[in-house]
Image (cartoon, rainbow, N blue to C red; front, side, top):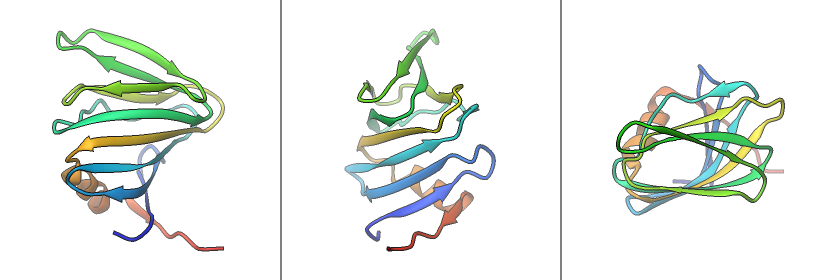
Length: 126
């Protein structure tokens, strides 16, 4: 993988900027537009660690019984989720949300799905 790669979800317009991805570790930034929400999902083989770097978002995290807990992440807030924990990234706010993500474990199949179904964003050096 090159230094950075970026992809946009054609439905939600969420952007994913990957700075590193392999079978042990993936990191990057997710840019969630105002009034958008990703579908409920999980990372079966990885712990997911989030740090809010700009704006804010709401994380809807589901426990093993399906009960949902909401966590509002503001700048410098963090949240860690266990392997396989279902969750939803949501931005019900007026400003763009920037969240640093770090997956400890293998999410290469998820990254490959993004590469195959999202629109590639061409990055230019300046």
